[in-house]
Length: 335
Image 1 (spheres, rainbow, N blue to C red):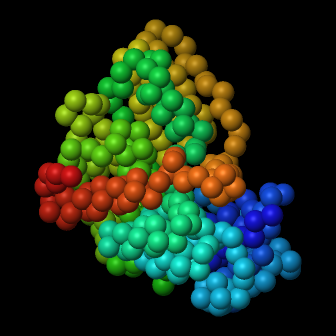
Image 2: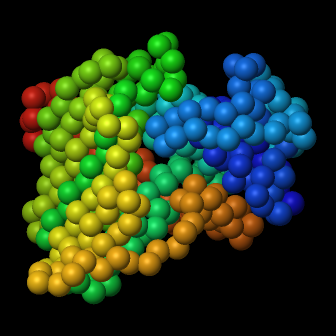
């Protein structure tokens, strides 16, 4: 039985805690958050909707991550804190001999990411960044189609991830401080950046345009990822959308197009002159799947090959180049 803790009990902290609570091979023993109201376990609203209240009666609670790490004999911990604290707390946990699953993005800066990787290597424990699209059924199916060549060569990929400003964090939310969150580009758009990296590897260059809206960082952006011998790849992101949260992609292959829209939560195959075909996909939660995978890695003593720290560090590097490009008015930035 593995003993787990969750540090940061906002919306995604609830998601991680619920995933651990479902398991018979993991016991959720402790939760930490600086906000005492969150330690009541009440429901929390985020862009994906409102989480259910979580019963913390059987779980010890702490107002400090350091106190939890000092007093609990943990095997693994989920870090669901503000972005600028991810790597800092990951280093502390790894130094305590605890395996770490940290929410995306890996860190606010590459220096912080490198510190986390160094701590992981020195500790001998596992570190994984919860880039959930690598475990999302629609995106897994796109990856499989690309790798197998079942529809021919991938010609074009367009991705979209938009929502209103993250008001669920309140008027003084850390999301709205771009120095901490990185704005929409590093907090939300990084999902698509990571999947592009996972699917195609690091691009030769990026060209991005962007504007701030609520955070002081890039909150509205459009990026072209340059693969000279590969597909045309684009992604748009916004924290200025008035219609709630929406994510989608269109992937055009030589012989078919895969299209996913969030509102109907389906993946369709489109072929010229034929009726659309809806693909059957597993009804699994990507959040549960990534935790299943990480726990399995711990149990087998193997690094998380699907989501290695070096790979998600490259995602950070790509995203920060997008930020540089946008701030420079769309300058082409080579990677």
